[in-house]
Image (tube, rainbow, N blue to C red; front, side):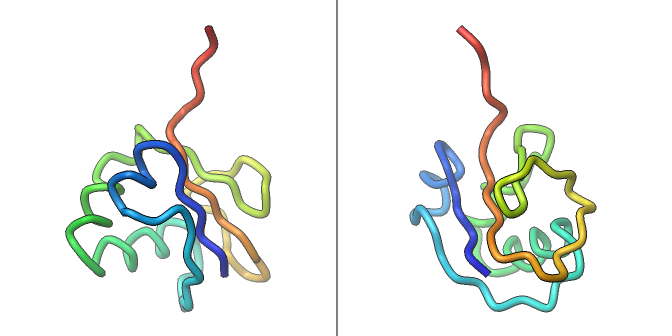
Length: 81
């Protein structure tokens, strides 16, 4: 599946997107797999309260199932101005 990173998440991980092969059942499971990869992922996902996720371009929760999902995006909460 395609995994996209935006704003400071992209800066910490160092790439804007990547294709990830995963057996994860939920977004939380995917995050656990990513965090185990390298320190840069562990840092990026260390505080989930500072992150939002979109699954196939729809806002989702971290317990959202991944079956059939093609794209996941991680980004900080948006603020108005």
